[in-house]
Image (cartoon, rainbow, N blue to C red; front, side, top):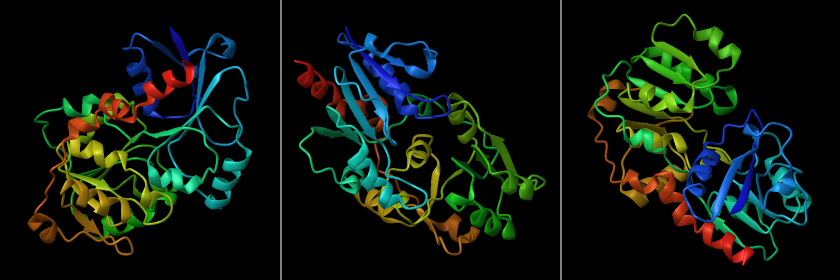
Length: 302
């Protein structure tokens, strides 16, 4: 068996690691492990492949197959400089995995190291929730912070209070303290990923509030895929990735103005929501199969 070690810190979410481990452990060639579940005493020499989701630094072993995954471009201050530094300072791996072509081009590696694309996927549990009783009008899944513009969104939302909004995820203290007494806003806090489908499915509309700024506006929105799998109607900000997605999958979502994200309820109720996406195509197993990662690994080894 070929043993793969996925490096994950205790604080990292990365549901794709769980998807990878499930995928590889269902094959005859691979055994996959999560470093965060092995404790601090695991030995890298016990593994054939070391797989990292790249920031700066990391494993420098020369006698192991190294896989570097770039699931996102750099964020925060000076993102382009961070991309540049990662390109030149990180160890050269045997294979790189990129979220999509936008992420690959953003890092701009100039060497001949092989690569593949692995888009975001949907856990099957999102497709298994059926006929949930609605308790909320809207749901938002993700980080509830100023960096994502959620302070601006909530300020405008509460001007008209168009319905009940459930917020699932970590929340900035100042945002929570501002709205904790609002009866129409429900904070769940961070919940186990397995609980997200049952909670989010209780809403009618899924909020995909993405700032129209680099790199968020050119990367896959996992929450949008999950909303669609749950059969929710999509309310979204308008940006490049969402427009490309609508065109590719013949969808029509309700758009918010990022500079003035006010809800017009009558307009929202009249909107003709369209989605021709086959969400089964985005189940993790199908996404990983499509990436050809297994084949590329075997080509490196043999």
